[in-house]
Length: 167
Image (tube, one colour):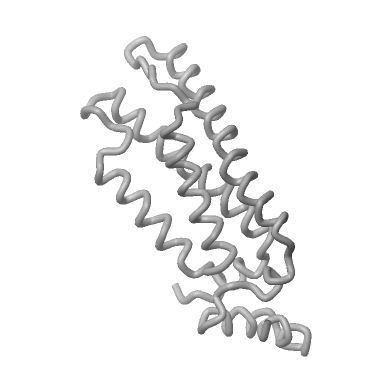
């Protein structure tokens, strides 16, 4: 709550962001939100994100099948494992945006690196495998964008924290 009092007492947004980078990584404004707001945010990010990303993957795969006779792209866009993995990554990203914004870039970079190191979405080195990996990477970007968008909507100060972070 001290960051909120600082902002109310005339501190600049940059000063509050710097304060939050030093210790209070959450958001004082977030403490004033009702639990229903959090439930709605996680449902939008996790379930809504699954529907959006699944639809995106379905449309892209259908387009690829139609235009390229060499690439099969037979995988489904609405599997349980996709819901669980995608929902988990969006939930963690949303939590970090809300309560610890400086850690979002590290989490995203580490998560994508781990998925590719484990051979995620790749069966073999082929044109189909390369296309599938690139498609999975674009879906991952959109997936994180949904979680970050919902989080920034609730915690506008996250943008100030990222802007204040040394490059």
